Image 1 (cartoon, one colour):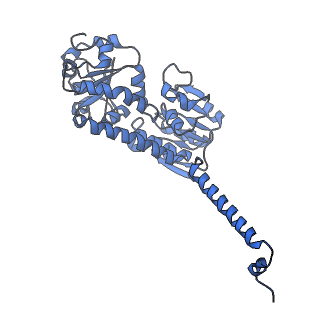
Image 2 (cartoon, helix red, strand yellow; image 1 turned 60 degrees about the horizontal axis):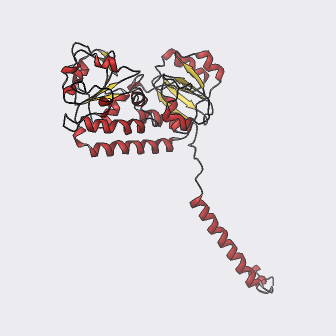
Length: 353
């Protein structure tokens, strides 16, 4: 009768010892594999494709993970870089950096040297780049431009409810996360930053319900709540004054007449400077009549801080919070005698100090 394999093994000299050694080695190999799974950094996970993204002009169908992305959004390159996706080409907004990336994005950009576009959208130039994805949230893209660009590559325009420049930063990041297969990373970033805003709100309960607005120096243009800077203030608990809704402008912007500044006489008034406009701020005729000025509730955002707020990207928001929160604390402490650091630096405190 043919013996079973295990029975035959028992008749071989040293079989028990050999089996024991094999078992020990298998156990050791299994333990090593478990340790590697625990300690080894996880490989980057790419979400499945194809992906479809619906926007104001239609639907972008992305068949596979894009490798050559053209970013037409004035701030979109920050969002892509935050996700670890370096655009092949980007649209420079303003500033002195040759690649249009402000200091908070330099580490993420690294040694990459994207093609830089500026000004109007050049359809022919973009076609020559042979992109496999065109991102155009916060770009001002028209329906005609979309029709042409979408023939070149899948093109993502903003959602209809947000208009040209009203998309909230989490919405923009989440959309790009889906488009590039990095949605999990996008959600992680959103959670971290929104948690930071929530902690700041909790630490400053007096800010919730207070009025606050960001206003450009020069033509005195106030950012409405639908604007990305207005959304920043909301995230800290502030709300824009209702008077802004009665002033002519755009859905995100209100032009405040110099002869009547009442609409921006708020609990926290942040002056945004796109260049070096300190003298212009000092020459606003009725500024001295504002309660915000008399009670030391003004804040001056220099070009770097104003740009960080204007980008409101996953890369710039931490910089903006680091600088702005201490200023708001000084402006909102209920003691007019407390100097706001930014106003003190430029000699624009109440009384000319």
